[in-house]
Image 1: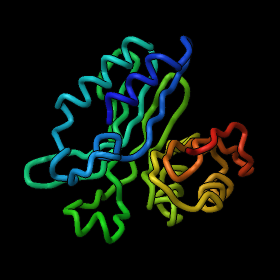
Image 2: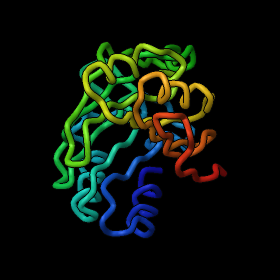
Image 3: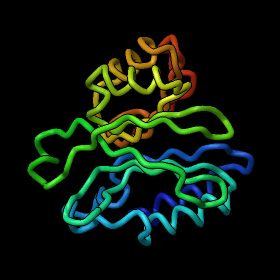
Image 4: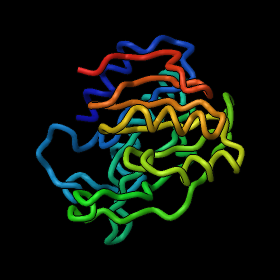
Length: 193
């Protein structure tokens, strides 16, 4: 499935784009495979393929995938810079029952990262249900939060933007891909299929 995301980005993302945000679980959606089946280290083939895309488009990339570190599997959002270097990662902190039962380990912190277009934080899907991830990132200086998401409550995404006076940008399947202003207004929105 990640090949399809890369193909679409290669074909449809205009030059000069600063950020390509992909949804949660780009390595598992539509495959019928388990998290363990698709999990790999962050120096594995999926991140390498995303790095090539970043260099080709000279754009930052954020994508949700399943990371393997030792015996642990994390639902991780990676940040890849314009030169294709892994610039950061965020491991989903709030794990829903299905992921816990599927062997996903929870992350434990809320890092923020400096890019050439601003200071960002990342949340993943279920994290949007809770106030503390966005608040911690805002207090650490995040100007925007990038949200790879499978599906969820759009009102809560808007609330996280409003509560913390920052932009929230989402990419999802059963959730709109959108840019929300610090006032919770959808400045741009792509319909979901």
